[in-house]
Image: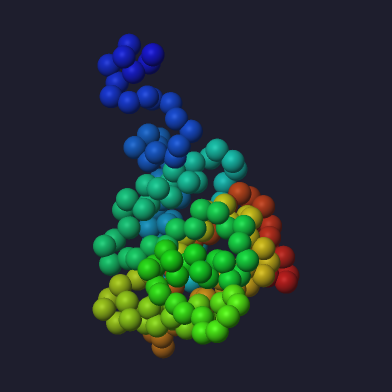
Length: 180
């Protein structure tokens, strides 16, 4: 109805986070600049939090459109995962092949070793690697600890993996707990 009446090429209202329709308020510009600065900062964590509907995912999509070419990005949008599931997802997102000799489920080592090799190989050719986790308030304490351990993958000069956590305000509260 709206499209034909106003001569629009597509429906103007959608619940999908389309960055073409992002109103860049001062806070949204600040959030996008924070993400871009973080990815150029050379490793560690970047945190972006906001209330439901504040535009975090849309800002993230706008960020993904501006990521430098030298960056490889893994994007996890459903973080209700075990440690092994998260590591498998990260490997899949980066296109890292892994193997598990024998039967049963892969171990953390089966996944971390090839991931570390990949990160070292891409670092050697001047590429950065960014892991983005949306809805990060849904991460378990065990998975958050594994993410922290992933930041230990480094050279003598820099971290090999930049981790961006995007979530609701309770994520800040979770990360402020003494055990984390």
